[in-house]
Length: 186
Image (tube, rainbow, N blue to C red):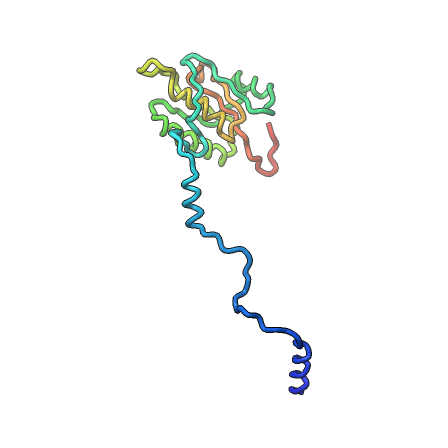
């Protein structure tokens, strides 16, 4: 039987020549991750704008102390924004940014929205104040909040509050809600 197997093998490989190299072709060469990271860092354009969690200061929209703020993302219903402006959408959380540095305000606002999302909150109030700066320029935190809210993916719209809730020194913010099962939209 062994001779039979050997002769079958011999006839099966007749005319086959041994390969001259003993290394397998594994396809594309493995990516040199370290070199790739160095190239990425070299290609990165550095700007003076500070960016935390997607909230940029590169183009801050300056607003005056008494300016009313209003903005709605495309697709947000006018009726919903009218209710928000009239104070008819109850806010379920409030954040006061008075006296904070811009950096601290940005970090606090981001954390506040993360918590609001976790708790399925629909509307919050953010008090930014409207104090004029000592250099005579427009209110810094109010201007930054106005800019950041437009950038935050969770914000559907915002408007200055009624006088009893802070007036032009605060905004009602309408937030996206990831709907929990079995819960209907307002």
